[in-house]
Length: 77
Picture 1 (cartoon, rainbow, N blue to C red):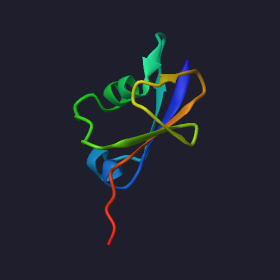
Picture 2 (picture 1 turned 180 degrees about the vertical axis):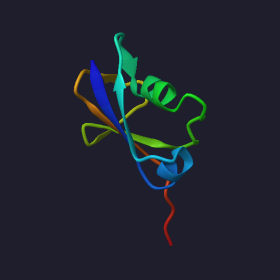
Picture 3 (picture 1 turned 45 degrees about the vertical axis):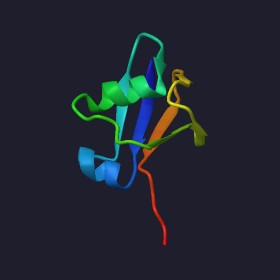
């Protein structure tokens, strides 16, 4: 199975890339996707995740063909 993983703003800068394609055989949650795709990076606190363009909890299940996106917390003024 395969999913697309996208990173935005400071996460893109932290990882040095804007997206990955991840192949997997077992069931994964959104948090598992982060762990497998980034390997050495701890997810920053308050990171938001979207599954197929809808915000979801980190324990949400991911399926073949899904797109997972990660967004850093943002502040405004």
